[in-house]
Image (cartoon, rainbow, N blue to C red; front, top):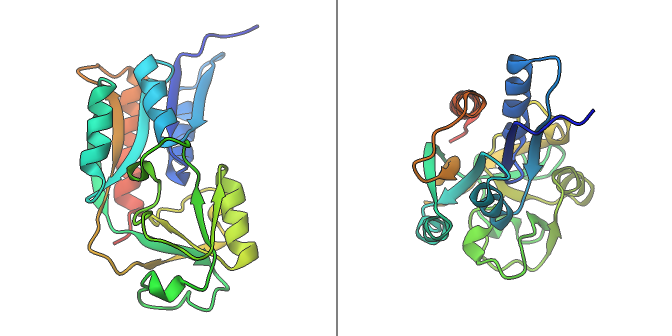
Length: 219
Protein backbone atom coordinates (compact mmCIF):
# COMPACT_ATOMS: atom_id res chain seq x y z
CA UNK A 1 0.00 0.00 0.00
CA UNK A 2 1.36 3.43 -0.93
CA UNK A 3 1.21 6.03 1.82
CA UNK A 4 1.16 9.71 0.95
CA UNK A 5 4.37 11.55 1.76
CA UNK A 6 3.49 13.74 4.70
CA UNK A 7 6.88 15.29 5.52
CA UNK A 8 9.85 16.00 3.27
CA UNK A 9 13.10 17.89 3.63
CA UNK A 10 15.58 18.85 0.93
CA UNK A 11 19.11 19.85 1.77
CA UNK A 12 22.64 20.25 0.58
CA UNK A 13 24.97 17.35 1.26
CA UNK A 14 25.33 17.63 5.03
CA UNK A 15 25.74 14.77 7.48
CA UNK A 16 23.76 16.55 10.18
CA UNK A 17 20.70 16.58 7.89
CA UNK A 18 20.59 12.81 8.10
CA UNK A 19 20.95 12.60 11.87
CA UNK A 20 18.32 15.28 12.40
CA UNK A 21 15.88 13.64 10.01
CA UNK A 22 16.36 10.24 11.67
CA UNK A 23 15.56 11.79 15.05
CA UNK A 24 12.29 13.18 13.70
CA UNK A 25 11.25 9.85 12.19
CA UNK A 26 11.99 8.02 15.45
CA UNK A 27 10.18 10.64 17.51
CA UNK A 28 7.04 10.72 15.36
CA UNK A 29 6.82 6.94 14.96
CA UNK A 30 3.54 5.60 13.68
CA UNK A 31 2.35 2.37 12.10
CA UNK A 32 2.58 3.79 8.58
CA UNK A 33 4.29 6.79 7.06
CA UNK A 34 6.03 7.98 3.94
CA UNK A 35 8.69 10.62 4.53
CA UNK A 36 11.41 11.92 2.22
CA UNK A 37 14.93 13.27 2.73
CA UNK A 38 16.39 14.61 -0.51
CA UNK A 39 20.04 15.48 -1.15
CA UNK A 40 19.99 18.27 -3.72
CA UNK A 41 22.08 20.92 -5.37
CA UNK A 42 21.45 24.41 -4.03
CA UNK A 43 19.10 25.15 -6.92
CA UNK A 44 17.39 21.83 -6.31
CA UNK A 45 16.71 22.77 -2.68
CA UNK A 46 15.23 26.09 -3.78
CA UNK A 47 13.07 24.41 -6.43
CA UNK A 48 11.80 21.72 -4.04
CA UNK A 49 10.72 24.18 -1.35
CA UNK A 50 9.26 26.68 -3.81
CA UNK A 51 7.14 23.97 -5.45
CA UNK A 52 6.04 22.44 -2.14
CA UNK A 53 7.78 19.14 -2.91
CA UNK A 54 9.60 19.63 0.41
CA UNK A 55 8.34 21.60 3.38
CA UNK A 56 11.73 23.11 4.09
CA UNK A 57 15.31 23.04 2.90
CA UNK A 58 18.64 23.14 4.72
CA UNK A 59 21.17 25.55 3.25
CA UNK A 60 24.25 27.49 4.15
CA UNK A 61 25.44 30.92 3.14
CA UNK A 62 28.76 32.63 3.71
CA UNK A 63 29.43 36.25 4.50
CA UNK A 64 30.59 36.54 0.88
CA UNK A 65 27.62 34.83 -0.81
CA UNK A 66 24.65 35.85 1.37
CA UNK A 67 23.48 38.69 -0.87
CA UNK A 68 23.36 36.51 -4.00
CA UNK A 69 21.73 33.57 -2.24
CA UNK A 70 19.11 35.72 -0.51
CA UNK A 71 18.25 37.42 -3.81
CA UNK A 72 17.63 34.02 -5.42
CA UNK A 73 15.51 32.93 -2.45
CA UNK A 74 13.42 36.10 -2.57
CA UNK A 75 12.80 35.64 -6.28
CA UNK A 76 11.50 32.14 -5.52
CA UNK A 77 9.25 33.39 -2.71
CA UNK A 78 11.44 31.89 0.01
CA UNK A 79 13.30 33.19 3.03
CA UNK A 80 16.41 32.03 4.89
CA UNK A 81 16.24 31.52 8.65
CA UNK A 82 19.69 31.47 10.21
CA UNK A 83 20.26 29.08 13.11
CA UNK A 84 23.97 29.39 13.79
CA UNK A 85 27.24 30.80 12.51
CA UNK A 86 30.45 28.81 12.34
CA UNK A 87 33.88 28.94 10.77
CA UNK A 88 34.98 26.99 7.66
CA UNK A 89 37.27 24.03 8.17
CA UNK A 90 39.38 21.83 5.94
CA UNK A 91 38.17 18.22 5.93
CA UNK A 92 40.91 15.72 5.12
CA UNK A 93 41.82 12.09 5.85
CA UNK A 94 42.99 11.12 9.32
CA UNK A 95 46.21 9.86 7.67
CA UNK A 96 46.85 13.13 5.79
CA UNK A 97 50.27 14.76 6.44
CA UNK A 98 48.55 18.07 7.27
CA UNK A 99 45.97 16.64 9.64
CA UNK A 100 47.75 17.75 12.83
CA UNK A 101 48.20 21.37 11.76
CA UNK A 102 46.73 24.00 14.09
CA UNK A 103 45.26 25.74 11.04
CA UNK A 104 45.58 25.59 7.25
CA UNK A 105 45.44 28.02 4.37
CA UNK A 106 44.28 27.13 0.88
CA UNK A 107 47.88 27.66 -0.24
CA UNK A 108 48.95 24.89 2.16
CA UNK A 109 46.56 22.55 0.31
CA UNK A 110 47.37 23.51 -3.28
CA UNK A 111 49.27 20.26 -4.00
CA UNK A 112 46.33 18.09 -2.94
CA UNK A 113 43.12 17.29 -4.87
CA UNK A 114 40.14 19.46 -3.98
CA UNK A 115 36.80 17.64 -3.83
CA UNK A 116 33.55 19.56 -4.10
CA UNK A 117 29.85 19.07 -4.78
CA UNK A 118 28.88 19.78 -8.37
CA UNK A 119 26.09 22.31 -8.87
CA UNK A 120 23.78 22.81 -11.83
CA UNK A 121 25.52 24.00 -14.98
CA UNK A 122 23.95 27.47 -14.89
CA UNK A 123 24.24 28.02 -11.14
CA UNK A 124 26.24 31.02 -9.88
CA UNK A 125 29.39 30.39 -7.86
CA UNK A 126 27.48 31.68 -4.80
CA UNK A 127 25.46 28.44 -4.88
CA UNK A 128 28.55 26.32 -4.10
CA UNK A 129 28.34 24.16 -0.99
CA UNK A 130 31.91 25.03 -0.01
CA UNK A 131 33.20 28.35 1.28
CA UNK A 132 35.83 30.04 -0.94
CA UNK A 133 34.66 28.00 -3.92
CA UNK A 134 35.72 30.78 -6.28
CA UNK A 135 39.42 30.32 -5.47
CA UNK A 136 41.13 28.60 -8.45
CA UNK A 137 42.52 25.11 -7.80
CA UNK A 138 45.05 23.24 -9.94
CA UNK A 139 43.49 19.88 -8.99
CA UNK A 140 39.73 19.61 -8.51
CA UNK A 141 37.17 16.82 -8.69
CA UNK A 142 33.39 17.34 -8.75
CA UNK A 143 31.08 14.88 -7.02
CA UNK A 144 27.32 14.57 -6.75
CA UNK A 145 27.21 12.05 -3.91
CA UNK A 146 28.25 12.60 -0.28
CA UNK A 147 29.65 9.12 0.26
CA UNK A 148 31.64 9.25 -2.98
CA UNK A 149 33.16 12.58 -2.01
CA UNK A 150 34.23 11.25 1.38
CA UNK A 151 35.67 8.06 -0.13
CA UNK A 152 37.62 10.02 -2.75
CA UNK A 153 39.05 12.37 -0.15
CA UNK A 154 40.45 9.36 1.70
CA UNK A 155 41.55 7.44 -1.39
CA UNK A 156 43.29 10.43 -3.03
CA UNK A 157 44.61 12.15 0.09
CA UNK A 158 42.46 15.09 -0.90
CA UNK A 159 40.40 17.66 0.96
CA UNK A 160 37.27 19.75 0.91
CA UNK A 161 36.09 22.86 2.74
CA UNK A 162 33.23 22.18 5.12
CA UNK A 163 31.36 23.31 8.19
CA UNK A 164 33.30 20.69 10.13
CA UNK A 165 30.10 19.11 11.44
CA UNK A 166 30.70 15.42 10.72
CA UNK A 167 28.33 13.54 12.98
CA UNK A 168 26.74 10.18 13.32
CA UNK A 169 27.21 8.78 9.82
CA UNK A 170 29.86 6.32 8.66
CA UNK A 171 30.92 8.22 5.55
CA UNK A 172 32.38 10.96 7.73
CA UNK A 173 34.26 8.57 9.99
CA UNK A 174 37.51 8.61 8.02
CA UNK A 175 37.86 12.40 8.07
CA UNK A 176 39.21 15.01 10.45
CA UNK A 177 38.86 18.78 10.19
CA UNK A 178 41.35 21.59 10.71
CA UNK A 179 40.48 25.30 10.98
CA UNK A 180 40.78 27.20 7.70
CA UNK A 181 42.61 30.52 7.76
CA UNK A 182 39.93 32.92 6.52
CA UNK A 183 37.71 35.72 7.74
CA UNK A 184 34.70 34.21 5.94
CA UNK A 185 31.93 32.96 8.22
CA UNK A 186 29.34 30.25 7.55
CA UNK A 187 25.67 30.95 8.15
CA UNK A 188 23.75 27.69 8.61
CA UNK A 189 19.99 27.52 8.59
CA UNK A 190 16.89 26.57 6.65
CA UNK A 191 14.66 27.98 3.93
CA UNK A 192 10.87 28.02 3.83
CA UNK A 193 8.17 29.77 1.88
CA UNK A 194 7.70 33.32 3.12
CA UNK A 195 5.18 33.53 5.97
CA UNK A 196 4.62 29.75 5.91
CA UNK A 197 3.74 27.99 9.16
CA UNK A 198 5.71 24.82 9.83
CA UNK A 199 3.93 21.55 10.49
CA UNK A 200 4.53 19.67 13.73
CA UNK A 201 7.15 17.55 11.97
CA UNK A 202 8.75 20.67 10.49
CA UNK A 203 8.97 22.38 13.88
CA UNK A 204 10.46 19.26 15.42
CA UNK A 205 13.02 19.03 12.62
CA UNK A 206 14.06 22.68 13.01
CA UNK A 207 14.33 22.38 16.80
CA UNK A 208 16.48 19.27 16.52
CA UNK A 209 18.58 20.78 13.73
CA UNK A 210 19.34 23.82 15.85
CA UNK A 211 20.35 21.66 18.82
CA UNK A 212 22.62 19.54 16.63
CA UNK A 213 24.25 22.59 15.09
CA UNK A 214 24.85 24.16 18.49
CA UNK A 215 26.27 20.89 19.81
CA UNK A 216 28.58 20.03 16.94
CA UNK A 217 29.56 23.34 15.33
CA UNK A 218 33.29 23.93 15.18
CA UNK A 219 35.02 27.29 15.32
